[in-house]
Image (cartoon, rainbow, N blue to C red; front, side):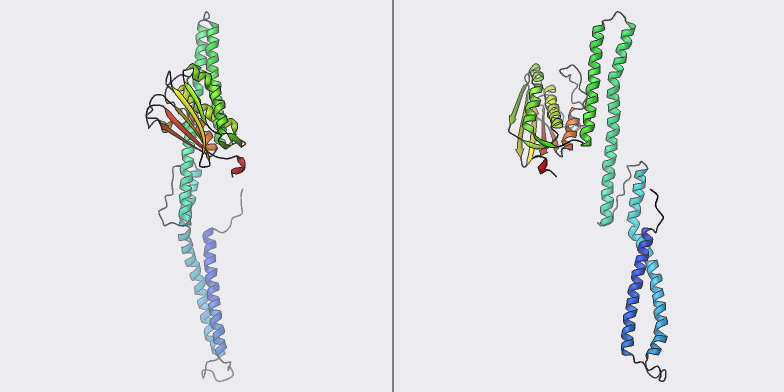
Length: 364
């Protein structure tokens, strides 16, 4: 929106300084004038030069006062202009950095090295904002590139299958349909995961009172056939654990954690333990599983999209897209919680989720 041109902040401060100095000087001269007139007699009818009188005071003091006022005004304008420029210099740097960021360059930083004051706090806050914004933009670019790659893979497989079927009319159509259905199922699952990840990142959901223990039991009951198929022992322990949030998203969070624990477990005879409890006013969910040892430097990357700890195959014979823990991290962050992944010394992973306790009435 276009606005009418006005005075700059530096000009406004300059006029303010000059005006304040002029008013202070005028008041000082007025006080001096009043006290001088109070103690000087009015004998202007007498002989001039014999004794001090108001006539002489007016003739000598008034021109000097006018000169002094003029000097104060000029001094206030010049000094105010210089002082205002020095005071607003940090703001000029911040404005230049904002323009640079607006042009698309998010790597620029102000890095003000002056003493701590309001401008230094503003510059530091602006640098922090730019750092987070740059990280978020880079993350979104990587995510878009990975998502396009993952979505292109099933489409390329489908095209290859159709090309092979066209070149071999005597092929088995049932096998072709089965493979196409499997590839299409993977593409649909990946698309739904991407949509869920976007929804949880946006935080657009209604909050309600949720019991994590019931959510854990429901997720375990759903995945029990998969665990039995793989010979995995699945246990759910703990008591009622109240929190506020989306029941659907929290169920998906627990389901992803349990499914990840089952799939990346030992081939036979492994265990998965799901435990819920309330601790320190927060709802705590722990999912622990046995499995192969994980390198400590790999664990922090597991919550990034399209990161896979192993190239294992799921029970439905489709490789995972690497979005399970990324969705979990996004849901936990949207619920103002924390997610901690710790590799077990004997192998496997311990995942701890802490969410604010209580229902929506206890949340700001």
